[in-house]
Length: 161
Image (tube, rainbow, N blue to C red; front, side):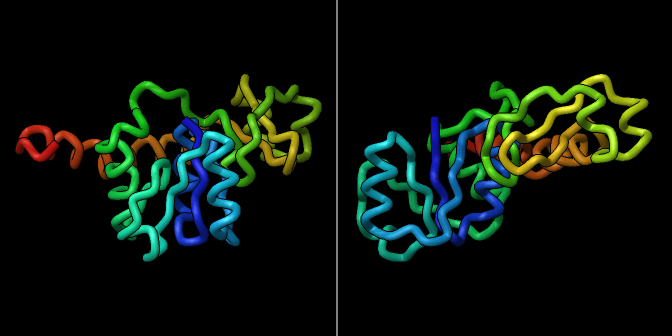
């Protein structure tokens, strides 16, 4: 599943990338670009008021400002499955697939302790950022476990699905 998020959903776009979903972030989305994205096979995510009443196929009006509730909405609508998707494989900034970096490429771009403690370092060939499994990834996993999944389980147990 591929998405495009409008200018009001930057945090959601970043989180979808972290969760492994190809997500374009378009700050200047207009009616023409919406049609183009739909032809491309992307699901359009928006907070734009004009889409709240219009029921366009492939356009999802995001109901909440809170990113955890936005993620839950996409789960409830069966557009994403965060438990089975491979995470941390896309650049959270530019949506490019991350590639394995050798330690020589990473040297000087990551902290020294990372060079010694991490076997796997990834980098983005588009924006040249480096990524590794560290406390930031664990904090992101913790956020999903504590903010997104409990509410999903609560909805299931209360019959609100």
